[in-house]
Image 1: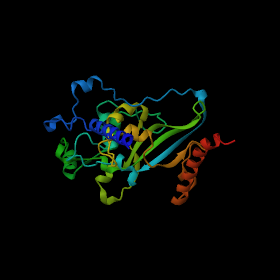
Image 2: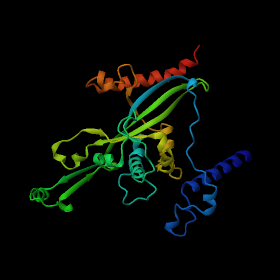
Image 3: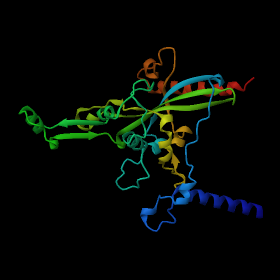
Length: 300
C-alpha cells in the first residue's frame, strides 16, 4: 500500500508540473499582463521545437501510396481545427487553424503556398487576396466611375472570408511501409482550407454554393509555426495540443476522396456518381487496403 501511495503521489506531482508549464506563469502572475510570459530562466533552457522527422532512405520504402482526404468540420471530433471562430472575447493564445495559417502567411513566416495539391504553382500574398476578399462597388460608386471621378472608399464594400466560413480541410498524405522498421507510417504533405466563394457573402440571396480550395500549404515547412499554436484539449485544458502534434498523430477523422492511380489520380466522385453511401464505402475500402498492407507483412 505504501508503494502505491508513493507512485500515486509522484504521478500527481508530475501532472501538476506539466499542467503548470502548459499555462505559462498563470499561477505566479501578479497582473494579467504577466500571463503567458516566460521568465529569463525559462527562456534560457527553452527547447520547445517540433519533433523532427527521421531520415528515410528511398531504398527503405517497400511500398507507398498517396491519398487525399476531406476533414469535415461539422464532425465533433474535428472541432479543434475549427474553433474558436469569434476571437473578440478570448485570449490571443487561442486561434483556429485557419487564423494561424493566414496570420503567418501575411507576416512571412509561412512562404510555401501553392495553388494545387501537387505543389507545382506557387502563390503570392497578392494572389491569396483575390481568393479571400471580394470587393463590390455600390451604385453610388458606379455613378462616380461613370462620371470619370475617383471612387470613394466608402462606396467600395469588402467581404473577407474568416475562420467561420471554412467548411472543411483537405489534406494530402503519403503512406509508406518502412522495411527497416517493419511498420506502416504516414507523412502529411499538404493541407488546404475549403470554403464557399467570398462573393457568396455579398450576394447571399443568389444561391452561390461553390466550394473552392483557397490555397495549399506545404505542411513540413509550416511545422514550426503550427507547433507554437495550440489547439483546445477538451479532456484536459491544462494540456493543450499543438496543431503540429494534432495533425501528425491524426487526431481527426478524414474521408479519402482520391488516391494515386493509373487513371491520372482520378477521384472517387469521378467513378461513383451521385451515391454518397457508395462513395463512403469506397473510401473505407481504400483505407482497409492500406491497413492490410502492414497486417499482411507479418502473416506467413
